[in-house]
Length: 160
Image (tube, rainbow, N blue to C red):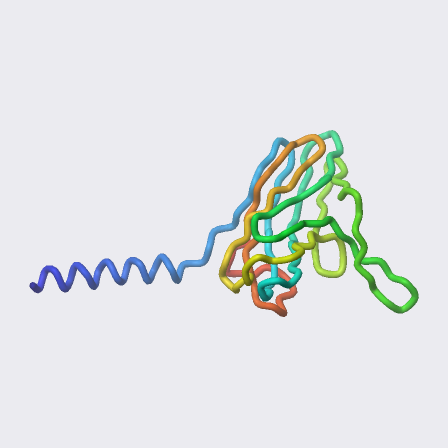
């Protein structure tokens, strides 16, 4: 009985350590493209979420994101923010350019993905798969780490 109790305690402690450990940085490679720091904010079901990340093009040729999709949303659109007078407005864009040898950040207040018609709530600590469609590199699936609703960037604990 003592062995069984100590074994259960050891297993429980190991599970607690795994759950408490910060997630490792996820960098996805697609040819010369390196995608990292992919994240989103918590959002209610039926709402519209956003996706952010950093994409580094280490190659000698430009590429671009021409589409995106996710099983978590009815539609995914490529967006940017533009200033109209004193008002910032979001607008869809046909593609997100990835110049050769440069880094492009999808971030709040700039280029980003819009996750329209969420089928379920995006809850802090969760992950959302998104498939990016590149003109040259093809399709690449990344996971957005869900941060708090008011987050301004990916949590440091995720190693991003």
